[in-house]
Length: 165
Image (cartoon, rainbow, N blue to C red; front, side, top):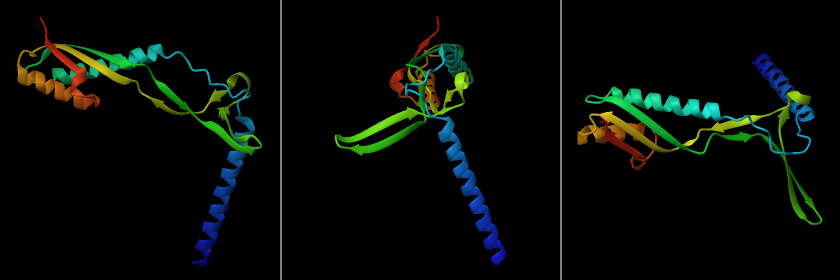
C-alpha cells in the first residue's frame, strides 16, 4: 500500500514539474510585442464552402422527404466566422486606480508567430429559402419547415418554402 502511495506522489510531482516547465516555456516565447490584434486570414472561400455545404445537406434532407423533389436551397448568413484568441491579462493597482493590460498569446518566433486560437464560432444563419416540388401541399410544406428549423436550430420564422414552377 505504501509503495502505491510513493508511486502516486512521484507521478504527481513529475506531472506538476512538467506543467511548470510548459508554463515557463510558453511565457518565454509567447508574448506579443505590441499587444495588437492578431492578423487573420481572409476566410471568404471557407465561408462560401461552409454555406454551400449547409445548402447541400439541407437539399438532401428535403429530397429524402416523401412528396418532395427538385429542391433548391439558399442560406443567408449574418456575418462570418468569429475567432476567440488566448490572451495574457495582467491586473495592477497603482496610484491612479486599477489597470488592466492584455496581450494576445503568441507561439513561435519571427515570421512563424501565430496567435493561439481558442475557439472558432460559426456564422449565425439569418434565413433559409427553399424552392421545391411538393410545397403546394400544406402538410409537406409544414413538415419541411419543422425539419429545417430543427436541423439548423433556427426559428421557423427564418424559413420560407415555395413551390417550384
